[in-house]
Amino acid sequence: MPLITKVYLVRHAEAEGNLYRRIHGWYDALITDNGYRQIAALEERFASIPVDVVYSSDLFRTMTTATAVYRPKGLRLHTVRDLREINMGAWEDQPWGEVARVDGKELLKHNSMDPAWHTEGAESFEDVRLRVSTAIRRIAAANPGKTVAIFSHGTAIRNALAVFHGMTVPQSAKLGHSDNTAVSLLEFEGDQVRIVFENDNSHLSEEMSTLAHQSWWKKGGAPKVDQTNLWFRPLNVKGEEADFYLEARREAWQTVYGDLEGFDGLGFLKKAQAAAEKDPNNVTCAMLQDKPVGIIELDPERDREKGIGSIPFYYLVPELRRQGYGIQLLGVAVSAYRKLGRDYLRLRCAPENEQAQRFYRRYGFRAIGQEEGSHRPLDVLEKYIGYKDQRA
Image (tube, rainbow, N blue to C red):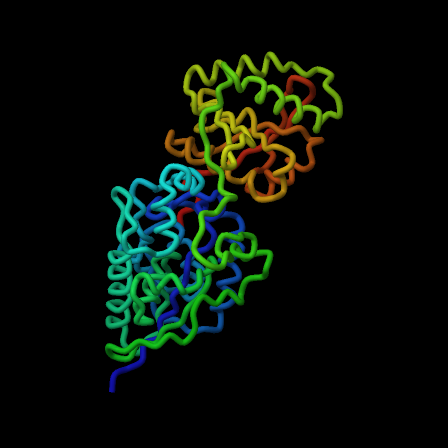
């Protein structure tokens, strides 16, 4: 009689793409601060569960999540490339909002698990479901009678579970989405597989849950494009959008200091124009559908020799603050500076700006000192975005 092999199938912890609303399939994203809290909760969940062997995809976010199981139990981690997320091709590291704007019809196909979905260089749903389900079966067959933990990715797991349910690609759209670090349990007995439970996130508090703070997955009826995702374009600071930049600078100054004493709008504008002259993407406008709602300004030359990506200005219109939009601007800076090989982001923030200080601390910035600003001393805040200090 065939032995029963238990397979715990676990999605990785919250990663940059989940937070910044960017498309990360094979892009090697890092775990967020909240993701590390999820990993700690996952470790506690598995403390009393015997596990014999641990596998993960070879991407950072799964290998790091797997530490919750293999390190406390003194096991070795086995990496399997076929457990990777779906390859998103030309969409990789693009904001979801940008893809919705330029390729909305294909995005709707993607969201509805339409087998006809295609973008240049990407895998099909048929490809990923075969690749991942086969890898899981192969692992189970290699470990008869054992308990195995496998760490993979959201779309990869959803498609594999659809195969084990006997669903076609279109039918798999009926399956729910798994939270970060959600756990499914499969039992393999010979060629047969039984799903004991799936997508269980009971080890997470509501505060730690990624899905609890997002709404895209809750929409009923036909799949829709999430209208809360931003897209980005260069801000024309040398033309008709100079006034928008100046007003943003003015509003930010007024909010922090309570008046406009010492405000040098023309000086700020000239610096932004010089930055845009070097590269239009140095002054980027955040767009919500057709409305400009924010600015992220970069200065790649400042502190370049120190491996630092400088952010001179970070702005979101007041009516969208505290609603999860601001973090998407940070994703622009991370994406741009990582491509330039920078390991840190650095910005300056007034000590009096308590709302901004809380925001930056929440997303991994720490104070490293003070510098003289144009009006008074500013806190220098820094965030690590490299890989070498975070490898599992």
